[in-house]
Length: 178
Image (cartoon, rainbow, N blue to C red; front, side, top):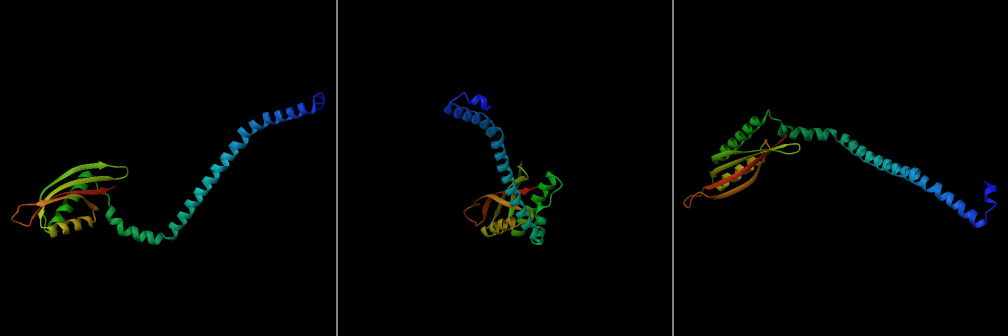
């Protein structure tokens, strides 16, 4: 190689060496160094993510007893029913029992259907009823604190007639289940 380079000027030899470095260096960078750096960077990010997950899991394990006690408190709220009919039937019974307990007279009750979402189902029921304002308040409070996880989604109140203090209420009640 030295024999071939001796015929050229110093400047031509420098350009040849630089060209040779570029011809060999660019592919080495593109096919070896850059992929290696990207892989190293990805592994670093995965390692950091795994470290965060590990620290979170260690904290959860440290609080295992507390979490189990908290879960036991709410376990009765999340009992899975047999099927759609049983689920809807239990919701209707709960609404009727709550209305009876709070003195609200139900004039009409209609299931509005089931909506399947990602991990759970949502049942809606329309209830038309009559009562005094205090009875409606107790009814709504008892529904919201029910073990069936009922939620009053919409409430429309109007006077039944001008002579009485009775109100006519239309409620949309929602139940969310697994």
